[in-house]
Length: 174
Image (cartoon, rainbow, N blue to C red; front, side, top):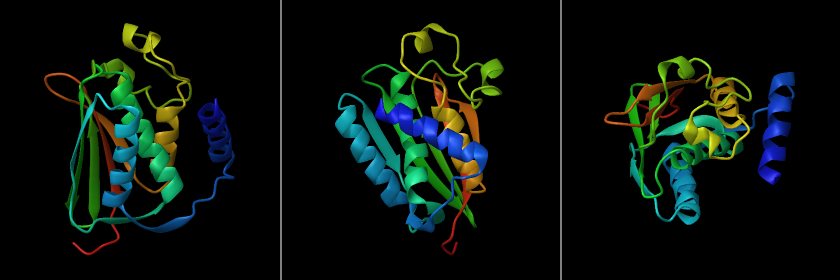
């Protein structure tokens, strides 16, 4: 219930422009390690694999970035089998950071990909009908990433699953 209230409040603040970013230099590796450690405690049956890049920092709001990453990890676990794998990978090229979070769930149909980030949108298949959710998580993820001048897209994972790819600017030298 607390999480739902926080999501509703944050969505309202972001829509009205009242959410101010508290920017700081963050190690994306450290942030992801924190998020993964929390996920391991909540989902001990899942396997979390992390391929990190050396010396990768971003200029970001730590609270909001943690919320976005946790939402993506939560979805990766929620829509896949209990013993599934979640792969997190950072790639850095020049001044760009690419963070991918891949799951082994049923994937996302092309028709749903263009709607998935809309407020309260939920895919209408059996997997989502059986899981709890408000349709705010991915909406907030996209708003948070865009507020940081980044982009997010959904790719297919083969043989099954989805990959959420975030692209942001790095603050460290190449």
